[in-house]
Amino acid sequence: MDISEEVDQFKILEDKIDKLIDYITALKKEKEALAEKNQTQEERLADLTDQLENSRTATDGVKQRIAALLEKMGQIDI
Image (cartoon, rainbow, N blue to C red):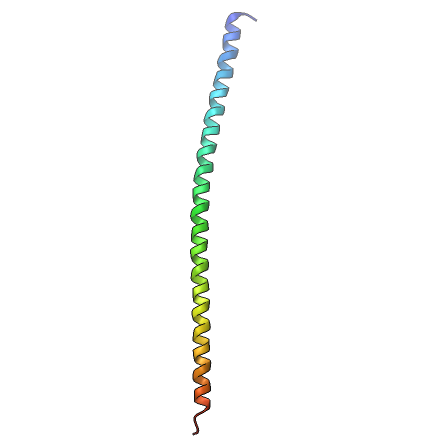
């Protein structure tokens, strides 16, 4: 193998390493973006869970009030 072939081999290796570094960098950026998106989705899920629980609590309160009103109506002599 002469010098020019060795230089060509080093150039090929260098190019492949550069591409690998670029690929790894892109993967890290994508991972960070996905982690941020995941965090946002988890926060949204927590908010929606809270809203659902508040709705259930409100519904239970309404049911109790309706039951109390029906009981009062049942006490009326007509």
